[in-house]
Image (tube, rainbow, N blue to C red):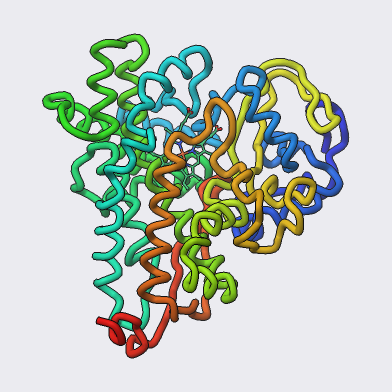
Length: 426
Ligand code: HEM
């Protein structure tokens, strides 16, 4: 094997396969060799350069002109003719949103659409998040066992996401199916026989997004970020375009929902696997904000992101040609010992946890990061207060095979309901 730069590809670089279970289970461990020996390498299986160290990845995020985000939502695995025909039969036309928009269009749009993400605006959502978290816990607190993903951590962030966007809460089951299909379509490697089914789901998602948008246009008053966008379109038609609104309606549901649902599942898993940390946050909730950051660092829900190189450049000592594609693995950066001391340790008091790159960095840094943080904080507050005695069941954690969106599909827990604190102090 040789890379496009002509260098021979090492055996480990040739073997790198982010659709394999080993990557899914523990991306930073799977890439330890790279951080140590070959911090940027060409993956022939993927056709991407893979970047794994903290400083290199941060520098890439910092320069969104040299490293364009335009490929962020492209299919990482090109699909066959049949699947492509299915997608076009739905007029599928996912295009630029914010996350994959270049300058200067990106900043103009981000500015116009920022207001609903300010701390002031986010405060309004807090009581709703709290109430949802309580209601979902009420449903299983006396059962002595639960799958936290199926019974809480998937649906609550979906409901919050829909509220935030202003989308009616119909079709939640359908949306769960569609958004997983979108993840597989964008960041996965569906087998030829799966591609067609995925294409139908993605096509249907696209059409549903269009219908929701049409309905919203009839009356764009009231709360919700997408309605806000429609209202802004009247003043800034060249900034908030029709194509943007349709693409964002679909991408936004995924961006606001799956990322946070996975982050919550990752956090519960990692904290319950570290009983001392769990006991400490149960006893002292003031530790929670930093524990949330440490979970996002140690076990983040967006494992890797993509950039397109727009001019010849040097990264990690290697010349990379214009036109190259990069897979930047933030979950590896977050375990780089050059930046985080003893990085594999879960340390809820770590003083630089929040320097993780799970939300990206720079001009495109996640706009929803504080909404996500609020949700994670509230889920942990409710669960540590009401079920401090829960523990993980014996189980094997499974993941949807893809490069980027990462969280266990199930987190099964058990406890003795007779010991629920609410029974002692009703
Ligand atoms: C962008 C991660 C939750 C909305 C991003 C990016 C990442 C990310 C990695 C790209 C950053 C870059 O290119 O530098 C996450 C994670 C979340 C989360 C890990 C949960 C734990 C949310 C939520 C929303 C949201 C709840 C809310 C609606 C957005 C938007 C962008 C974005 C609009 C595009 C920003 C831009 O390009 O200017 N997110 N996200 N995200 N995220 Fe999130």
